[in-house]
Image (tube, rainbow, N blue to C red; front, side, top):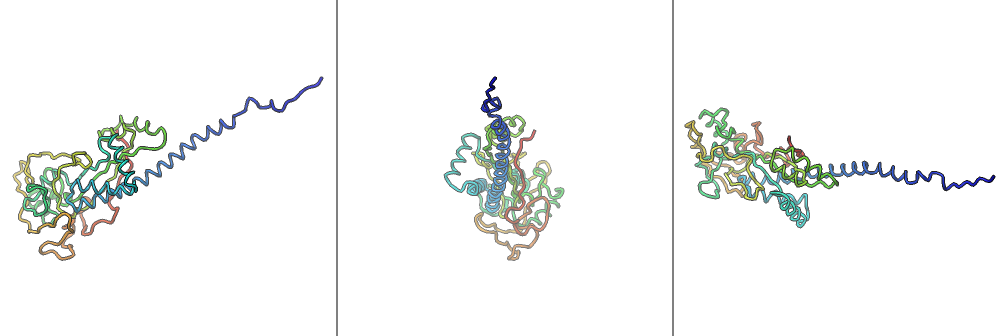
Length: 321
């Protein structure tokens, strides 16, 4: 009896198994690759946002911490992220449509309460309106000594609990929303919104964006002035004054008078470089921290501004429970 044999029938039921196995391996490998590219992009973006924030801080330090000047400088610094002006405008417009604000900078120092404690009514300098409170940027060691002589522990104000040097330090936190490009990550981000306690972070997460945070502290090189936050919410203060009706420079219920009688040293306009006052040497190094304050709570010789990119810290933000 003849037996027919057809080689084409061998393994017919296994046809396509190799392709299926390849797809099973491809999906996680592709996901890991995209995730690595995403992380690399985040690290570069984190560094670039820090540089843009430092640029805004430098402008704020020489413009009396004016919120409008800080906002303009930061958006100008975003050219490092979006070199094309049209791409920058489009990115900000997309964020304005999806979020309450396209980005936000919170001023941590000087706080509104710092002006209630440390504002000098005799300070001479540029003001937006005659009664605008100013904190003197010069003679900080003398101001510190007089506050300690008044009975303020370590020279810290009763409302703000800050020293005159800390009140002359510009500290800011940037919150920048960034949409991930890995497919499916947006829905995972939205699920994290329920764990966030901060209203702005929650809105950012609900819209499918990740909130990036960067922090910068820089010594002031002009006399800080009390400004109103921007109405659009881009630059705001981290906290409201504890007693907005109190007179700046007085301590409520303590009877301590404001620190006055400091040597007269007219302050230059905010758009001019610092110039030494009467009795100060031309190099402006009469006393550590007298002209520029200190970039942190650690007091020391800060007669020179910190190098570009110094005193910056912060990481990609994750929602706090």
